[in-house]
Amino acid sequence: MEREAVDSLDRGGLVRLVLTQAETIALLTARVAELEAKLSAPPKTPNNSSKPPSQGQKANADTKAKGRRKGRKGAHRPLHPKPTSRRDVRAGRCGCGADVSGAPQFVCEAYDHVEIPDVTPDVTRVSLMGGVCPGCCGRFKADPPEDMPRGSPFGPNLRALALYLRFTQAISFERLARLLTDMLGLRISEGALVNMLDAAKEAFGSARATIRDRLLAGTILASDETGLRVEKKTWWLWVFHHGDSAVFVAEPSRAKTVVSDFLGEFRPDYWLSDRYGGQLGWAVNDNQVCLAHLIRDAQYAMEAGDTIFAPGLRHLLGRACRIGQGRDRLADATLKAYERRLDQSLDELLNLEPTAHAGIRLQTSIKKVRRHLFTFVTHRDLEPTNNGSERALRPCAIFRKVTNGFRTPWGARLYADVRSVLETARRRNIGALDAIRLTLAHNILPLAP
Image (cartoon, rainbow, N blue to C red; front, side, top):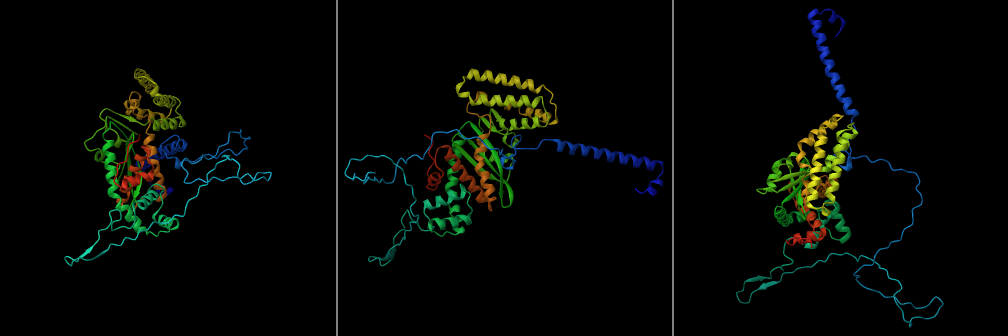
């Protein structure tokens, strides 16, 4: 305000002005304190939060000269177990000049020469013969062969190759069309490639339904989700898995309805996931939350200044994970004793008072999921962490970064079905290309031996 305006105020006006300024100063002081707290907090990194590794900043490597490496035994490429052909080369002359072509000889050295033959498409021209029937004078024509019907000119191996390159190598349609032209000498338009994918929807949808039936026949489920871009909008790609089966679901929602629609009336006995509310509350008996996420949260609280609660929790969760890794060597009674000790140690930690705000928040979150921390100890089929879900979603995150998403919803849902087949095949020791061929032929993926 100008001085003249202040001079014109009476006693009541001056009091109101002072009170208003005091209130404004208090609000600004609180805001400054909040911003200073944010600036003083440690940065979120992949090591202390759920931030993905791709968004982390790696430190520069030490550039000082390293000492001479210790020598080790040399290695070489092993010989192929089933060579296509063999070529035995006999010696003609000795180093002294003598003729040794007729002397007895044995294998002194063997090596493989690997080459790729010229790749050319195998094109079969199908001509359906016909004519006029001498009996009824009507026209007739031969039926198309069952292995080469009318319609798409592309055979199952070519379609499997296109699906493999698209969904496992994340090759765009434009680059894929150019690759097939350069490698096979076969011109296929981008529209024809899209039609190949569209024609595969039924086969992969049926395979996904079969995998889902096997998955829901078990007693344990693990789940997680990651973002997906479809039609320039945010969708979510969910994974539900356990053992040798995995099913992916692409939906525009992250709500509990996605899980409800996937499960139907089925409810597993145990559920492994992170602490997101949409993945909790589905198990009949109990849930297991991911300890790896909590260990990273504890690391962040330690970096934020907590020296009481977070260090003890991080040590306790690490000990629990080590117990989980050695369960195959421990008796059931021993595991129950370990579980009691872990619970007692956790109770002691929860009675402590953290020394930083981040530690208080961490302690509050631990109290909410306290009964879901050590379920895995006495249930051998449960894992202490949700790393299995993270590994299943990693190829999807790479595909998202390379392709920037999908233009249509059916493309996203087809990708989810294909990933269901590929991830299940990986768990059953089946190659990706073989799995795609089996699916296109409407064959069920065999179980791992």
